[in-house]
Image 1 (cartoon, rainbow, N blue to C red):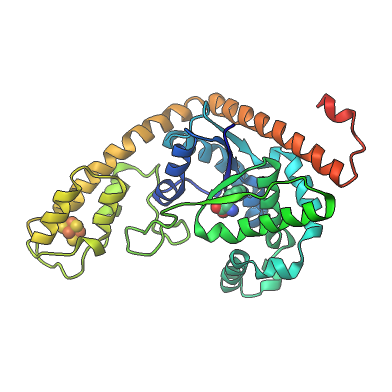
Image 2: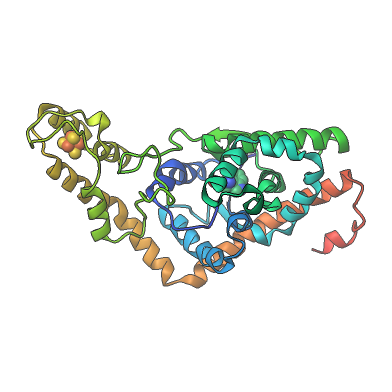
Amino acid sequence: MKKTILSGIRPTGNLHLGHVFGAIQNWVKLQEEYECFFEIADVQALTDNFEHPEKVRKNVMELTIDLLSVGIDPKKAHLFIQSQISEIAELTVFYSNLVTMARLYRNPTVKTEIAQKKALFGNEGESVTYGFVGYPVSQAADITALRGELIPVGDDQLPLIEQCREIVRKFNAIYGETLKEPEYLLSKTPRIKGLDGQEKMGKSLGNALYLNDSSEIVSQKIMNAITDPQKIKKDDPANPEICMVYYYHQLIQNPNLKTVCQECKNGTRGCVACKKELIARMEEFLAPIREKSRYYENHLEEVQKILEEGTKEAKKRSTETIQQVKKSMMIDYEKDSTQER
Ligand code: TRP
Ligand code: SF4
């Protein structure tokens, strides 16, 4: 029996290279070996965007197209929409009794995000909703509804997995052995540096290179990338280890990497030429992704179908889970009607 992988992503914008190299390339590998469920976490996206449902709605389709274009294969993995699995919402309510407010506020991920909101909006009390503080509970519901065993995440998400494990232990201790504790699969490169030298590429950091950026924009962004500041003239020797251009040559697995490194160190490579090479390789890297993306843009009904089928599988699993959960909690009144679903 293949182990089950569950991971999720919020539909709040298009995919950029930080997502691709930090997470999605790993998902693409995992789908070869595991039973994979990848969740479009629209309910979670709404915790921050509840006033802009149209934005989340639009992003669900765009994100799905991006994921398919990068190589998520609907024949191998199930892509599903969180809001369509009502069992997740049910579990969220049931689990909410098993978590104290103090514990939620202590969750490092929540803590960091509250601090960010505070910096943005000033008054914490007015900007931090019940739904937001509780999103670790909802994420525990995502994981357990699908009975995810291995959860690929970046280290910023570890506290959420830990909290999920606590909820599972508490549930089992009170209602009897029902749920299984998930384990995390830590991404080796969860944080991808920006071309501008910032520690992370991110939408909010304004330094993201998007999969759907035009060739012109890609070229512009790479030409502006931060190189070794010590290198002034074209033939100054430099240190590729502190150069973002070199870092991206590595990420896109330039087969010419050794030469780039040597020539940089020897001072026989100018930064402009080096950037031009990266642009060319990036275009090569993006070409098949853009092509697939164009295909799906023109076959939206196919995308719809993929989501429907993935969601159907997710629903099947979650229905089984909720039946067991309700039985354990002695709220299984609908014994017979559940079979008709
Ligand atoms: N919170 C995750 C993020 O922001 C996305 C997510 C939603 C998730 N549900 C999940 C990750 C379940 C792992 C498992 O990146
Ligand atoms: Fe960076 Fe290339 Fe310039 Fe070296 S030659 S500093 S690797 S851009």
